[in-house]
Length: 282
Image (cartoon, rainbow, N blue to C red):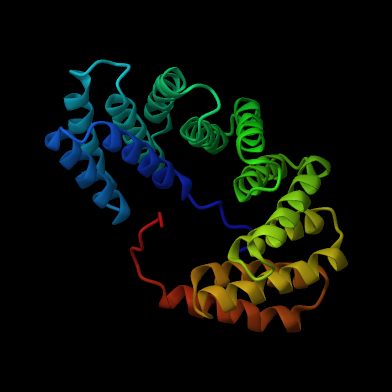
């Protein structure tokens, strides 16, 4: 396997942010709160149909507080995230857009929760292959983090990585490469050279080089990313398997099958050892 799809992690992270915000302002509604907590618990376990039911109830409860209430925005967002992970994109889109509009009204256009909402809507558009819709949203996320946290913050690196990945999937390698390089530089400086997020940037930059036939530039990045993941996550982690697969694919492109085969074999062993129904979101 060459390139696994980007995992859908940020949905729940942002949903939790929305929940915590609304909970901190309105902790006097145990019914709405209990439904939301139950939905998040089901989501974390990968029980998306159950999470959907819980969030629909939470949304109905929140409606009586008005459509500009943070609890209503939170319920919209959480339900949208659940639809998205089930690939119910048409159902998710209007909910994300409504939640974003409410959040902007309540908190202003530069608030961190607005950035989270924008990022999730952009990721939805990317999954729908509506790249022209996703691009300005990702760019706005970068701008919010740069303005509010400074150009060297890890949030900036993450948003640069998202925008770079959007360009990479469109084969706009000249646009993707500088974004991945900047993301890598920020993460190495702020998080340290052995942080798992550094491995992500290394891997993505290597994929760009590989796609352009710059194999000698890609190989040391794949090797370093693999070493970081093994140390940080353990030798049998699924992300290690993905890195092994990516590196093995490169080696085959470089006509080095004898080196690729043991990496592929090891990746298959890791995949077989993985739980059958792991939670998608961490």
